Image 1 (cartoon, rainbow, N blue to C red):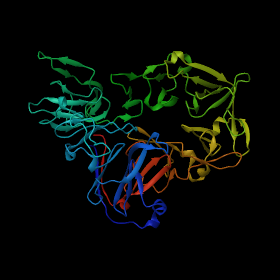
Image 2 (cartoon, helix red, strand yellow):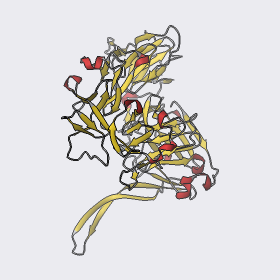
Image 3 (spheres, rainbow, N blue to C red):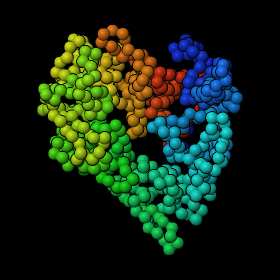
Length: 513
């Protein structure tokens, strides 16, 4: 466990300080509905049954019910945040020793799978089912990876009673032996990500070099990728690459150094969560260098639209692209949701063909992009110098923030749109954006409300969070943030701001070790 926060708070904060509390008397966290004043928790769970009509015909139904949870004692319980898993202690597996728990994978990215270890075992699940039952006592325990009797040294490394060193390889799920001649300095060793580690002597990758002894035991030989000359250099971790000193490496299971200048790297959203990396002269996609000539001259590239950001209307006869608007619908028009780039001369529409190898990509050049100007209510040629792509379905044009298929955001004056950028936490992308003063939640984008005029605007009133303490802000998951005073829970309805003191609960937060 990298960080554990214990908060013992039972004081009640006046309702007038929090607009959220004035609207309702409960807070929603995952499947739990918390009533701090009444001191109980309601839980949502699956339900179903069979009913009969007047003629005796049976019909089946299913859905969910929300009822007071009989297992949770509000005055004695502990609420745990383990990545994207929010759980009360009554729903934790009682076999797990929480005091010695180490988290190796938290489910940050909405996938609820977890990998962790206590002083005895490595676990792949530590939760009971929604009825508080532990259905299979052994299913989620890896007895082949027993850590009982081994001392945890930190950074996923263990030491056996005989002095043998092990590390837990999350990629293959095994406790691997480290070779006796391992160059790792255990006193300064830190886990970076995947199979990458670093210490005062350099940057290593584990799992790419094995040897076997006469008893067929396999041993891992850490591979030194970069020497630090005795200085502790902290790697910079991004979604698809790592910078260590002046070198760039792909975040892959095996060693892959990228021929990119770290201070010139730019990322282009090319296909869903796949990114094109370029430094102006070389480009990589899925860790492979792209050989096509267009991708070796990217110095002046500007991203106009990412794959899936918004539907573009194509006119191949005039070589013109239109952004959609109420004035020009994409219905019955030739359309595309491909990546759009300005290369300083023309617009490049890059159809990645479902993310296949770049050799299969289709690049079409267009002369002009017509964008709808909300202030003039007319189309105009895109002024690339007044345009900035911010993220999926978000862009700024002439000082106005647009979203949701090119509609202006009503609350744009509450945001410094020129400074708005995605919010990353420890190299992981969240569903939040920030201008340094407020948070904008952009996840679960089906709960928008728009005005009813001819040219609709999008309301973000429940998605903008002010008065955030950025000095203590941490991302629990893509959708949940926490600072010293509040929990920010993003959902389809926007962001619920939950004052921690108001909950009156003991809270424990785990992050990856």
